[in-house]
Image 1 (cartoon, rainbow, N blue to C red):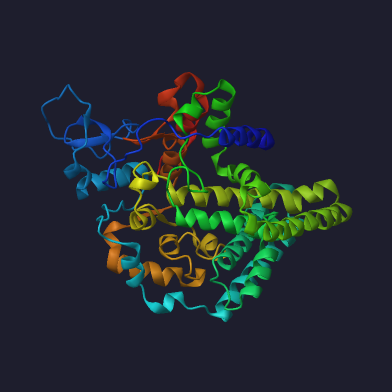
Image 2 (cartoon, rainbow, N blue to C red):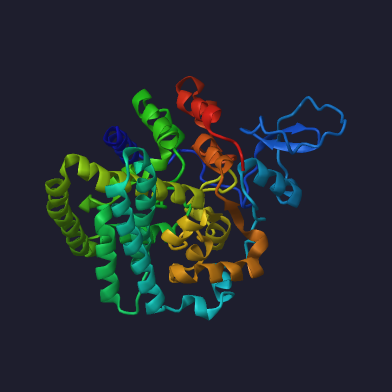
Length: 442
C-alpha cells in the first residue's frame, strides 16, 4: 500500500503546476478567515464543534454570521488565545513586524550557542548507539505482545541517528568537515537515507521554509491537483489524512534517488551517497536474513524503520503545519516571519527528547541551522527572552495532531487551508473517520 501511495504521490508531484490564481497573499502573518460569530467568541471555520471557550453571557443573536476577520481581531491576544486552545497549542505568537530581519534575530542570540563542542557531539553518538543496541536486544528477547514497545523504543533510537546526520549536514557536528561527511553518511545508512541527496534538498527547505512551490519539505495540496482525477484525489486524501504519519516514506522515495533532481555540480557526491546506501542494502539485508530469516528482517529492521518514519513525518508536520501558519509565494515571503513565526516548538515526553537529541526545539534551528543540537535549548531560552511573544509553542497532544490531520489540507489564499471534507465530502470518509476516532484532548 505504501508503494501504491508513493506512486500516486509521485504522479501528483510530477503533474505539479502553480494555480492560475493571483499570487498575491496578505501581508499580515495570519490570513483573514471566514468565521462564525457566536456570543462574543470567534470560532474559526472547521472548528464549529469546539465551543468550550465561548463566553456564556446572554447576547443578541446575529444571523448574518459569515464575516472576514479584521486585522485588529487577528492581532488581539484574546483571539490568539482562543485559537491556541482550539488548535492544541500552548501559545500562538503574534505577527512579527515586517521590518524585523532574520539577522536581527540571529544577532540577539548568545555567541556560545553557535560553538561546536566535540565532546558533546560524540556524546550524542554514544547515546544513539547505546539506545539502538538496547532496542535490538529488547526485540530479540521480548515476547510477541511486548514487541510493539521494543519497536517503539528502537524506532525512536534510530531517529537519533538521523538527527546526528542532520547536524553533520548543517556543519554543526564537528570542526572537521571530512569527519562530518563520514559520520553523516554512516548515521543515515541504517535508514537507507543517502546523505548528500538529502543534504542538498534539506538545505533548500531551510532557505525556502513555507514558501509555496519552493519548500522541499511538505506544503499544502493544490486544488487543481485535488480536482484532477478521482484516483489521485483518493491517494491524496489517504496520504494527507490517515497515512500522514508515514508520508515521509513517499517523500523519501520521490526526492532522494532521482539524479535528474540535482544540479550538475552535485551529481558526483549524490552518486557516492547512493552507492553507499545500495552497498548497505546489498550486504546488510542479506546478513540479517541469513542470521534471522525474513521474519528477523521484519522484526529487527523494517519495524524500527517504520517507527523512524512515524517520527520523521510527525516531527516535520508539527514543525511547520498549523491552520494559522501561512505558506506564501516568493514575492510575499519574509525570511524572519517564516523562520520565527512559521516554525513550531513542540515538547515531547522526556525520553523522546533525549533519544532524538532535542530536534523538536526547532525554532532556533530554523533561525540558524549552524546551532548544534546540544545547544538548541539554550538558544530557545534566549529566543523566549527576546522574542517570546512571537513564538508558536505546544506540548504534543491529540488535539494538535487532529487539527493537522483533519484540517490542514488544500491551499487557500485567504484561509491558508481548506479541509478535504469541505471540498469533497463524499470522497472524504477517511477524514470523517479520523474526526470521530481521534481523541480531542490537549
